[in-house]
Image (cartoon, rainbow, N blue to C red; front, side, top):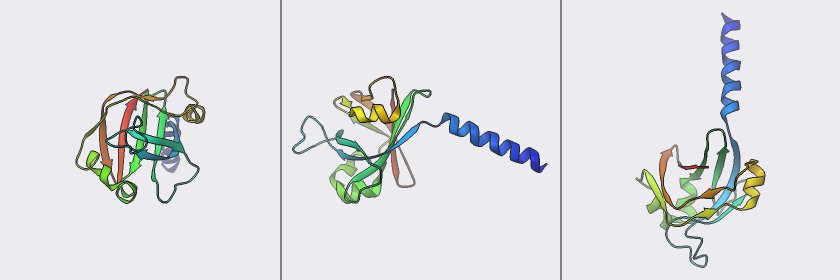
Length: 141
Protein backbone atom coordinates (compact mmCIF):
# COMPACT_ATOMS: atom_id res chain seq x y z
CA UNK A 1 0.00 0.00 0.00
CA UNK A 2 2.85 2.36 0.88
CA UNK A 3 4.52 1.67 -2.47
CA UNK A 4 1.35 2.50 -4.41
CA UNK A 5 0.90 5.73 -2.46
CA UNK A 6 4.51 6.82 -2.98
CA UNK A 7 4.37 5.94 -6.69
CA UNK A 8 1.16 7.96 -7.10
CA UNK A 9 2.67 10.91 -5.23
CA UNK A 10 5.82 10.93 -7.39
CA UNK A 11 3.72 10.66 -10.57
CA UNK A 12 1.59 13.60 -9.43
CA UNK A 13 4.64 15.76 -8.69
CA UNK A 14 6.23 14.95 -12.06
CA UNK A 15 2.97 15.74 -13.88
CA UNK A 16 2.56 19.03 -12.03
CA UNK A 17 6.05 20.23 -12.90
CA UNK A 18 5.65 19.27 -16.55
CA UNK A 19 2.70 21.68 -16.83
CA UNK A 20 4.40 24.53 -15.00
CA UNK A 21 5.71 27.42 -17.01
CA UNK A 22 8.78 29.51 -16.40
CA UNK A 23 8.24 31.81 -13.42
CA UNK A 24 10.18 35.08 -13.33
CA UNK A 25 10.37 37.53 -10.40
CA UNK A 26 9.41 41.04 -11.50
CA UNK A 27 9.09 44.59 -10.24
CA UNK A 28 6.70 46.96 -11.95
CA UNK A 29 5.05 50.35 -11.95
CA UNK A 30 1.35 50.54 -12.61
CA UNK A 31 0.28 53.18 -15.13
CA UNK A 32 0.12 53.96 -18.83
CA UNK A 33 3.49 53.60 -20.56
CA UNK A 34 2.53 56.24 -23.13
CA UNK A 35 2.66 58.85 -20.34
CA UNK A 36 5.82 57.85 -18.41
CA UNK A 37 6.34 61.11 -16.53
CA UNK A 38 3.15 60.71 -14.52
CA UNK A 39 2.01 57.15 -15.39
CA UNK A 40 -1.71 57.81 -14.81
CA UNK A 41 -4.56 55.29 -15.23
CA UNK A 42 -4.07 51.54 -15.58
CA UNK A 43 -1.47 49.53 -17.45
CA UNK A 44 2.20 48.86 -16.88
CA UNK A 45 4.48 51.87 -16.95
CA UNK A 46 7.63 49.89 -16.16
CA UNK A 47 8.21 46.15 -15.97
CA UNK A 48 11.59 44.55 -15.17
CA UNK A 49 13.18 41.29 -14.09
CA UNK A 50 14.72 41.07 -10.62
CA UNK A 51 16.56 38.30 -8.84
CA UNK A 52 14.91 39.24 -5.54
CA UNK A 53 11.98 41.30 -4.39
CA UNK A 54 12.69 44.99 -3.91
CA UNK A 55 11.45 46.97 -0.92
CA UNK A 56 9.74 50.12 -2.20
CA UNK A 57 8.63 48.46 -5.43
CA UNK A 58 5.51 46.69 -6.61
CA UNK A 59 6.69 43.08 -6.75
CA UNK A 60 5.27 40.04 -8.42
CA UNK A 61 5.88 37.17 -10.79
CA UNK A 62 5.38 36.41 -14.45
CA UNK A 63 4.49 32.81 -15.29
CA UNK A 64 4.89 32.09 -19.01
CA UNK A 65 3.65 28.78 -20.39
CA UNK A 66 3.65 28.28 -24.15
CA UNK A 67 2.00 24.84 -23.86
CA UNK A 68 -0.90 26.39 -21.97
CA UNK A 69 -0.82 29.40 -24.31
CA UNK A 70 -0.89 31.98 -21.55
CA UNK A 71 1.08 34.15 -19.21
CA UNK A 72 -0.04 35.05 -15.71
CA UNK A 73 1.14 38.11 -13.86
CA UNK A 74 0.87 37.93 -10.06
CA UNK A 75 1.05 41.23 -8.15
CA UNK A 76 1.27 41.57 -4.37
CA UNK A 77 -1.55 43.66 -2.89
CA UNK A 78 0.62 44.83 0.04
CA UNK A 79 3.09 46.37 -2.43
CA UNK A 80 0.37 48.20 -4.36
CA UNK A 81 -0.98 49.60 -1.10
CA UNK A 82 2.49 50.63 0.08
CA UNK A 83 4.05 51.95 -3.14
CA UNK A 84 1.16 52.99 -5.43
CA UNK A 85 -1.94 53.18 -3.20
CA UNK A 86 -3.84 55.28 -5.74
CA UNK A 87 -3.77 52.29 -8.14
CA UNK A 88 -5.60 49.87 -5.82
CA UNK A 89 -8.91 51.11 -7.30
CA UNK A 90 -8.08 49.12 -10.45
CA UNK A 91 -7.84 45.89 -8.41
CA UNK A 92 -9.95 45.93 -5.23
CA UNK A 93 -13.29 44.18 -5.76
CA UNK A 94 -12.74 43.78 -9.52
CA UNK A 95 -12.93 40.60 -11.59
CA UNK A 96 -11.22 42.05 -14.68
CA UNK A 97 -8.82 44.79 -15.73
CA UNK A 98 -8.79 46.82 -18.94
CA UNK A 99 -5.57 47.68 -20.75
CA UNK A 100 -6.27 50.72 -22.93
CA UNK A 101 -3.07 50.28 -24.95
CA UNK A 102 -0.73 47.46 -25.99
CA UNK A 103 2.25 46.79 -23.74
CA UNK A 104 5.30 45.00 -25.14
CA UNK A 105 7.36 43.34 -22.44
CA UNK A 106 11.10 44.06 -22.66
CA UNK A 107 13.19 41.59 -24.71
CA UNK A 108 14.82 40.27 -21.52
CA UNK A 109 11.51 38.51 -20.74
CA UNK A 110 11.55 36.65 -24.05
CA UNK A 111 15.09 35.48 -23.35
CA UNK A 112 14.35 34.47 -19.74
CA UNK A 113 11.11 32.64 -20.59
CA UNK A 114 12.52 31.05 -23.78
CA UNK A 115 9.36 31.81 -25.77
CA UNK A 116 9.32 31.89 -29.55
CA UNK A 117 7.04 34.92 -30.00
CA UNK A 118 7.34 38.42 -28.47
CA UNK A 119 5.48 38.81 -25.18
CA UNK A 120 2.77 41.41 -25.75
CA UNK A 121 -0.22 42.38 -23.65
CA UNK A 122 -2.77 43.48 -26.22
CA UNK A 123 -5.22 46.27 -25.57
CA UNK A 124 -8.30 44.65 -24.02
CA UNK A 125 -10.12 43.23 -21.03
CA UNK A 126 -8.48 40.46 -18.95
CA UNK A 127 -9.64 38.33 -16.01
CA UNK A 128 -8.45 39.34 -12.56
CA UNK A 129 -8.54 37.05 -9.54
CA UNK A 130 -7.44 37.59 -5.94
CA UNK A 131 -6.11 34.89 -3.64
CA UNK A 132 -4.14 35.15 -0.37
CA UNK A 133 -3.01 38.74 -0.90
CA UNK A 134 -2.04 38.35 -4.55
CA UNK A 135 -3.81 39.63 -7.67
CA UNK A 136 -3.53 37.43 -10.78
CA UNK A 137 -4.07 38.65 -14.34
CA UNK A 138 -4.07 36.08 -17.15
CA UNK A 139 -3.19 36.92 -20.75
CA UNK A 140 -3.13 34.78 -23.90
CA UNK A 141 0.23 34.41 -25.65
